[in-house]
Image (cartoon, rainbow, N blue to C red; front, top):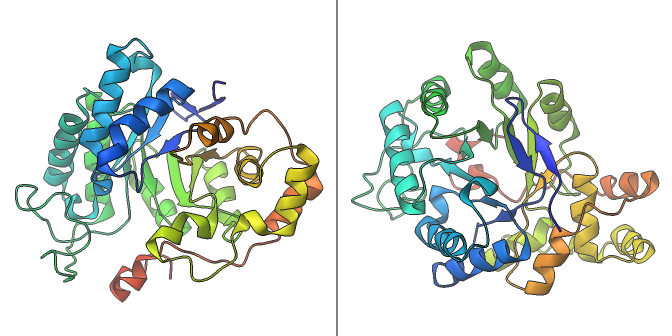
Length: 319
């Protein structure tokens, strides 16, 4: 089934259910993207930091060549990394990423984190990840968000990104961005699941006409393979989730995704299983009751799994 769409503040239409490319290995990525397109996915959420953009592009190219889809039917999102926040480096990163994907424009280009790290030449190491030396040394730089955003606006005006936005931004920084942005961010991507509901941030985004994309919708399950789940019980096992799944005749995963989409958010789950690919895409054709929505939201414990402060305290963007 096709995903419903959300209309962004510039009129661009974004599928509400997409496919997340974080942790998709290079060896399987092209096939994974191809199979996801075949299953009906049209939004793909990537990033320079994921290290698989070339392979993603290969999957897209094969699907287009085989007549499964046209480029204009896809919605491709990617993100500029922390080491490229200086204006010239934002443009340099965009050019490299377009080349890796083998396309002429992105549908959505995001600032991955409001964190400026020391530049690493792509010829030296790509993607550079967090450290300046590849050995764990964190070195910050002084590029302000305003400089980075001005480069994003230039990219939008050039047509190389049909929409621009932000990721992992807190409310105060969003409000500051709105004071000088000529082009307002169209999308805010955040960690969002029943253990981290962030209601006030979502309400602020709504008031500012910014659509929200939720990542890590399954909470600790998304971080299990990285040994970052902190021993927290999977959300699939929570009684309120299981009961809602039983009542609706759906899986716990579908319930967790519907909990987000029914409240107007976009989601970007991933799976290598053809069966789960179809299940995850079919999460907008049933409704949870208001009591179920409230009960699932009641699981909130403000547990954040993706926190750069755990890498270096100077990266405490959520403090």
